[in-house]
Each structure stands twice: as structure tokens, then as C-alpha cells.
Image 1: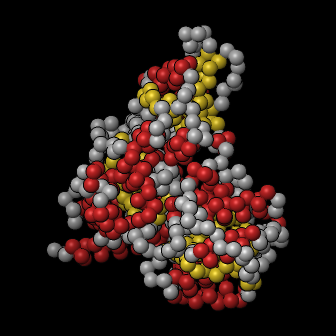
Image 2: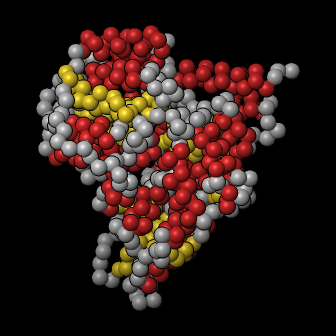
Length: 561
């Protein structure tokens, strides 16, 4: 009979083999071979080196607040937007993305459209109308708590956000505890699940956490500041380390166990939809978190096992703030309308209402606990491992005007989320690559030099994107070799496809072999090359415009640094 350590080894071997298959077309560089090749290429590119002059040190004493960088609410699109007329009462709902999108992610859009067409009347005789704004649950809660959009309907994925809003002192009326049923789960490759069954009586949440702590499971989850599944996962992990006692879940013993767990987590996606897209395109994770509704639509679903955890995700509907009586009545009428058998059947067709018998691992904790858990996560998620990172900024001609101004703003705002223990550098590129800031610990002086370098950014020329990435990879690799147990990463901001320098086929295998995650923020919607770069080594690909780039950068760095 195999020993437990040998069985763990088999899990790791299977994981590595599956990850290797996902990197189809690779010339199979070893890390050392890639390291040397990247260093040679970077040297041959002869990047410029410029140092911006600083006039004073930057005050780094204040704590960053993501709510300070919220964009205008109109940045988040209206999925249903009925005409505002004098004889209509329109109630707006900030709605989570898994039901305010399109196709199988558009259940609430379809039901709201049907509601608006049904000519439902209020006692006053006015028509009742529903507007749906597509926005992730965590970001919507920040709009409410910050007071930047205090009065509206709200349908997050689960009740945790409502508890946090109540904890902030806002008026909350829950009109429907459940619109449609859903649950969170850990999705695991069947081959890995089969191996774990030999080691554990039941492959449940505690077994998965144990395997991750031991380093035998390659797992990812989502950002608990934005994702309902991520917040649910965080609170479940903490409470499980305290044996179900919420009162002890933030004490040193549970916190120490959480830090040990985090050492085995390679990837935190910002949302579950991004997690799903990453898995479908890469597939190197052994396990990851996902809602059941998303799992039902997973392309390779037959290759995975779904393991429920945490509280239920029953998509409540609430009135937040000082909504008028008639608007609240519209929400109540809509909640009743959504419960109709035909609409619930539509929800089931889209993957909701599965596993209705599941009751939850633990009861939902208080809002104060959740707020403290988020702060703890920000402080402890890297388990003492310093980050070594380079920002790579596109300053080609197409980035001129407002774009370069907003890019500077985003980098300044993002720098407030970087912990002092991390090491940061900055590269810009157009026709040529420029090292603006070597990688050094992000202390007061480095922060000032970073700010000065950002102020110096000017847009012109074409786009030598891959040249810049090779230089950045070389910088990060060399700096990481000097910082034991560090976490390397690259953050790339660009608005389009490369137009100069090396091409993708010359560098793709090197980028894969270097194993440095490349987080990308695109100014121009879905730029496929940027998404492909993020897929290579499990990183997030974000899209933004001039209006929300600072918030997107803040969200990314709040999650990763």
C-alpha cells in the first residue's frame, strides 16, 4: 500500500502533467534555459534607462480606500433600461453579473424585460418598471457603503454583502431572501479527486483546505472584495480553522492557519466569470471556486467534480437607503413576478435552482466579522511572501490625450495599494523600451521615484509590446532570484495590438516557461493578445476605459499586493 507522502506525490505529478498539456505548442524550455534566453534577448534590445528627478518624498502614511476610486455609476451598463415617463415608477436594481449578462448569464434581464412588458400597475395607477444595472456584488456594495449611490434596489449573489451594508448603518429592507437558488462550490479535476479519495474518507471542504496547506493541491479562488464566491470562501476558511466558532475565527490560531493555507494558493481571480474564462482557456489549476450556475455551463464540465461549500447563494432582493414607497412596491411586485413557475423554470434552464437540499456549511456571519475578514485577507494573503513586480506601461501614440492622463492617474492611485514590503519597478514602451525605475523595495523613496517616473510618461510612436515584456521578465526574474520565496508578477497596461518589435511566436514559449503571471489591463475592450498573455500563467485580464482605469488598477492591486 502506498504511503500518504507517495500518494501526495502522485497528485502533484498528475497536476504537472495536466498543466503541461495545457501549454500546447511549447518548445519545452526548462526554467533555466528560458531565464538565460530572456536575459540574452533583453540585453540585445538595449533598453533605454531614464531616472526622473524627485522633488520630495511621498507621504505613504495614509491607508488606501478602494471606494475613493469608484468611477461614475454610469460606467456600469444598464442591462434593462425602460423609458422614464410621468406615468411610470422605475425601480433600479444593481444586479450581480451572473444574472445580468446575456445568454445563460441573463436570467434577470429576461425576467425584468417580461415584467416591463406585462404592464403591471401600482395602486396609484402608474405602471411599474424595473431597470437592471450590471455590476459585481462587491463593487455595488462599495457604492452603497461609500454613499456614492445610496438609494437603489440590490440583488447580490448572496446575503453576505447585505450584512456588510447593514453593518455600515444603511437602511436595508430585504424584499425577497431568494429570487433564484444557487450555491458556491470548489470545482476539482476528476483525476485529482480520485487521488484525494485515497487519502481522505470524504473529499470535502476540510480535506481540500488540508491538501492545499500541505502543498499537494494547486488551487485558485476569487477576490473577496468583489466576488460573492470569494467572500464566501474566505469566511468559510476562517470559520473552519476555528472549528465553526465565528468568535474565534480572527484569533491568532485561525489566522496562522490561514497564512499556511495561502502559501498553497497560486491565483486569485477578481471575479468568478474571470475564473471560469481562465480555467476554460488554460486549465492548469487542480481546483477552483465557482458558483453552481457557472459550473453547469462549463465547457469541460465532465472533467470536473463539484463540491459545495459555505452559505447558499440565493440571490436576495433588497431596497437600500431611502427608496420611495412606490419604488419599493415595484421591487416587491417584481420579486413576486420572478417567483412564477415559468420564470423559475427559465432559471433552472440556465443552471440555477440546483442542489436545493444543500443547507450550508456554517450560518452566515455578522457584517462586522466580514469587514474584518476582508482586512485580514489583505494583510495576510501573501503569507509573508514579498511580491516582486514590474509595471509595463504602453506610451505609444494611440495612448495620447486623455488616455495618457488617465494612465498616470491609475498608476498613482494604484501605488497606494502596494505594501511597503513589496519590490516594484516601472517600464514604458513605444518604439523602444525604457527602464524608468529599477526594482527596489517600495519604501518612501521608491514611492517618490515611482511617482516622478509616472509624471514623466509621454505618448508617441508605435507599440513594441513583446520587447517590453522580455525586458520586464528579465528584470523580475533577476530581482526574484535575490528575494527568497518571493511572488513575481508583471502588470501590463496597453490599448492594442503590437505594431513593432518582436512577434508573439518568438516569445510565447519563453513567457510560459518563465512562469511569471502577466496581469493585463486593456483600454480597448477585449484585446485578444492581452487575454492570451494573462492565460499563460494564471493571471487576470481586465478591460477598462478612461473612466474606470484608476478603479480597475486599484481593484487589481488591492487583490494582488
